[in-house]
Length: 99
Image (tube, rainbow, N blue to C red; front, side, top):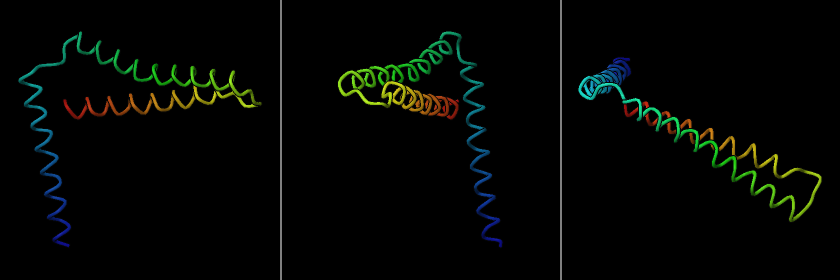
């Protein structure tokens, strides 16, 4: 029991240290600038748009090359959108961990 308690206390102390370091860094650096925020929005937008467009292009090529009753364009559009959203999610989480 006491071993579990000491592990949870150590974990809590580590979390407090990380948050304290983040707060000190934020206080020293200040909030992100307007242009940095605009750049982040652009990067996230491209990380969603680019895989989606690649999926559409690949799907269109497959549909023209090998016609079938399934729309590869639609399937790869959704696959690209999902991959792009996952990439954007990762970028946002990395940015939040940094600050």
